[in-house]
Length: 374
Ligand SMILES: *Cc1c(COP(=O)(O)O)cnc(C)c1O
Image (cartoon, rainbow, N blue to C red; front, side, top):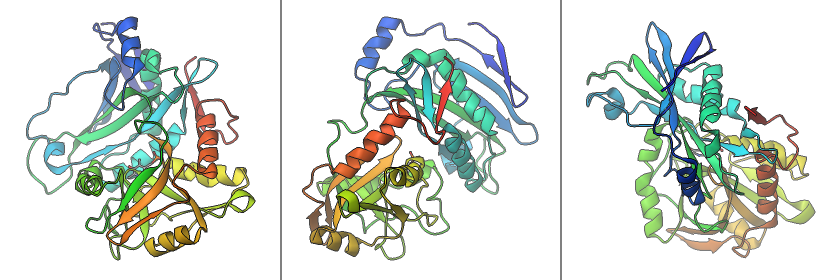
């Protein structure tokens, strides 16, 4: 263990290096085929919060188990929010991530919704910088591989009272080298339109990256798999008619083709998760001459437009898988195919452009790329 300090937001980070770091050979073996979220780097960052005292005890420390009292409030009342972003190795060897300040801002919007304290954005960004400084060798070099960063926060008060939110919290950052999110590469997914379950209702927590949203989704996802589908599509809570999102990704619809192609994505009604990939595509598509609008789409319109051929492609987007084509749709009312069921040209073009910016192979015209360290 060594100790030295580095300061942000008036807060000094204690650096406690692991004496059980993986050897370069062990690391290379793990990076060969890491799966998704199975392998973790040598260190993590933690910062504690206590009401009245604010954020304190910031450190980089060896990755390892947390010790929690069984009455810790997060385990009972689920005050837990998270983020997901990736670090990439650019062609010049430097490390970069994509719009991390947007993740920092969304983390704080999620915190506000769950009555949790906001983390100063510079601390969020500093935690990433520190982890990459010490675990940068874990950022894979292979194409389509990256280091997935998982910042999260849990409540840590001990006790079962539920009259008020916790008064203490811990923010943590862990990192996991990842290959391609959907094993088997880019192949269109089949989706199930869920009318039995609801992900988010007006006034609820759908716009927050809140752990409980996922807990509530697993049964619907299991049902989608039972119906022979890969992913669940969420519809609005009131009518089960308006398309919201797919699993943990936002959805896009391509109408027309070639020069006449135009894009549509459901608007942020408060029940959708405001994806950073979604928001980036709202800018990137028009840059490429493809108009993009936010406008509701119903399941009837989806089916009719697919059947008439006006709807040519559908894809989902999010940090983990970037862009994934949707080829087939099933519901209680039957099933239909999008185009010929293969990945469409607009989907693949947008994917290439976006991945190109993220990985440093395309110019970063919007200042979306933040470089870390060397
Ligand atoms: C994280 C997430 C997304 C995608 O957001 P990105 O910022 O693009 O990664 C979409 N839907 C849900 C439910 C999510 O949790």
